[in-house]
Amino acid sequence: MKREPFFAMVIALVTAIVLPLSAQGTTAHAATLTPSSASLNQSKTFYRYNARALASRYGLNYASQTALTRQETTKVYVASNDSQIKKSTQLAMAYWNQKLGRKVFINGTKSSHTLTIGMTGKNTSADAWWKPAQHQISLEQADYNQQLYSIRNKMINQNTLAAVTSANHRIQAYGHRIANRANFARQYNAYRATQINQAQKQINSVKHAIVAQHIDTKARTFKYANIIAHEMGHSLGLQHSANAHDAMAANSSTPNIYNYSKVKASKNGFNTLDKTDINRAKLALKVHDALN
Ligand SMILES: [Zn+2]
Image (cartoon, rainbow, N blue to C red; front, side):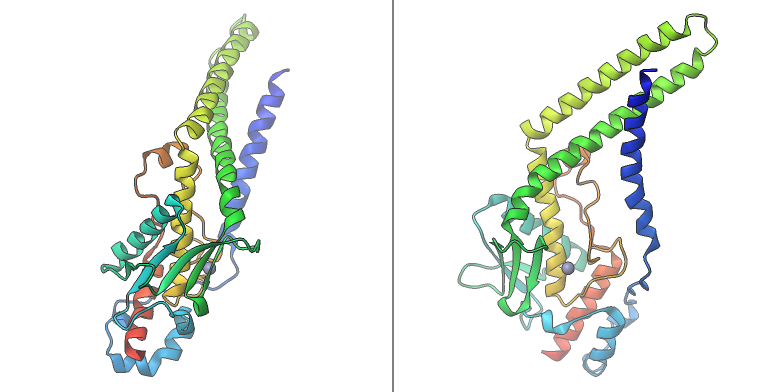
């Protein structure tokens, strides 16, 4: 039967995608706590007195708050001419400001800023990191360059999987429907050939559109908005979260980033800051205010 490679391909793709997702649920770490609204409405004396206890309870590190002014704002300067990095930065700032309910991140200038975002060529294992002593978020240039191709391939693969899977479902359903017909084989094979042909056309047209409409570049800009937002979280005093879905998780990811349709339709990317991230940041800002 010629249909085996087709089904085998589907199974291989589905297995590859499903396994990492189910593995996410089995984290051994205790959850990172979300500060309650009561703990966000205490006196300066309370925060000053309990600073150390709050740090250990909620995973805060005040030593990394070097970009905060005494007004609890951060003046951001992008030391790069890359327009997409500038866009990612503006999105990351908006993600925090929207959910914090005030402009903690504001635009600085070359001569007046408290945080710099710049590219480096150090070839480390990280794509980005917060350097509190230098007041700098560094982005690894090689990784940034490579990401475009990686995102493009993953987006193509995700779309291919979707097209193949749905063609497969239609073919199976059709097979069941005509199972008792005398000319089963001929009709089934004809239907199957048509479905595969249509799926192939859809796959090729999306493949072309991803590059021609710069959907891969757009996805990378969104991905870096999340990467920069994560690093900005460190600059507010947040250590990594043990909760896999938090933006401050060590291996935080951007959902939808490989989804061609969703990236194409999105204007402002995918803000993954959740209540735990935001309340921890609010608390870190309260303590900064009390200590400075
Ligand atoms: Zn981190």
